Amino acid sequence: MRPDEIWDVLVIGGGPAGSTVATLLREKGRRVALLEKDQHPRFHIGESLLPMNLPILERLGLLEQVRNLGIVKYGAEFSLESVDRHQVSYFSNALDKSLPYAFHVCRADFDDLLLQHCAAQGVNVQQKKRVVRVDFPTGQPARVQAVDDQGRAQVWQARYVIDASGRDTLLARQFQCKRKNPHHQSAALFGHFTGVERRPGKDAGNISIYWFEHGWFWMIPLRDGVMSVGAVCWPEYLKTRRTTPAEFLWQTIALCPPVQRRMAQAQLIGEARATGNYSYRAQRMVGDGYLLLGDAFAFVDPVFSTGVYFAMHGAILAADAVDAYLRDPAQARPLLRRYERQLKHGIGVVSWFIYRFTSPAMQTLFMNPRNVLRLNEAMVSMLAGDLFRSTPISLRLLLFKLIYGLTLLGQGTRSWASYRGRKRNVKSTFTDGAPAPD
Figure 1: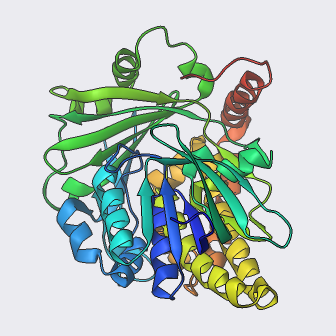
Figure 2: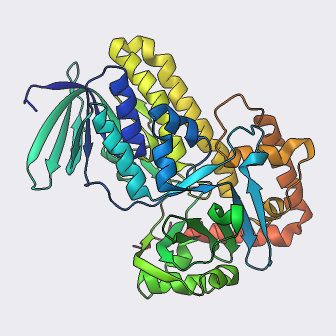
Figure 3: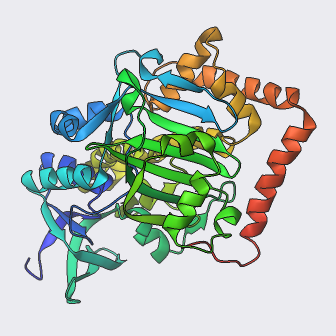
């Protein structure tokens, strides 16, 4: 890199969002550099993809490679700790039947595949380069300050900057516009295990979701007999931890008998991890010469596995908008508005369900699906990530919300008061100045 070299686009972060947008912009003939703070492959949570990821992987020419490193999942199953049964939602029952499966992937391998492909397309990929600040001098290229793993400083110049830094949320923190989500606070414990019982036959790759007293569990089958197991809990529960994350995860597993039974012979691989309140959103998504992409803008909750899909779908929209901006900023405005509108819409749709996911009424509806007026097909379409096309889902999801409200009323004030009480406890936890768990 020459000191005076100016790139068309500089991408911060080499996860699915950054790798995808950098690849697409390079395909459009742009000179693109990507700075990644870590050395891939590296551990990352979020192993479950959605059916709507498949067309994007095919567009990148990586569908078969992902198939080879992943586990096929045909649906998602939901269970209550107190009920000895589970309800499976198969993707083949969505409104659009053409994408009946998805994959689970080890994110270290998946992210590494995307980043290597990005470099092979001609993107200047630089790993172990941590961006610490970006300046946007008026009328001049952006100046991106980075340090390498030896602590040596670098300055990169670019006509446009895409922040795909994930939960580092570099620009949102720099602009002081990152905000905790006031409607949803959760924390998580998770780890990888061997020896976990899998479902038989076609259901062996399904993700399993279990509600329990303090939140919900996920169980995600991976290759080589590995199972990703995590508990998403109210933060006040995680604040009761007095042991190591591994010991506390085992204690939490014991609180949900169906999960405990499937893990009777399980062994933890490596370390268990804990993360504090992770739900946030930036107040700014697009600015003059930059945009925030994927988790660098917002993250709500992993329950519907939308993170990787929203990141990669957003990358497609962002690549079109940034390419247009580099030709003529004025001409790019409609595409930038489309980028903002679609991603905020998708986050809004899944957020409504996430905020209510642990409520008794939502548990009742998920465990007892009905396809009157194709409502269950619409719900499966939402689980598949089909939120941005012309699939007739919107009116049916609106009707589902009405049924949810009626179900809530039918369950009586006691159930509602218990649920609201838990939500209030969560809110008070984050207004008393207490720290989040590790």
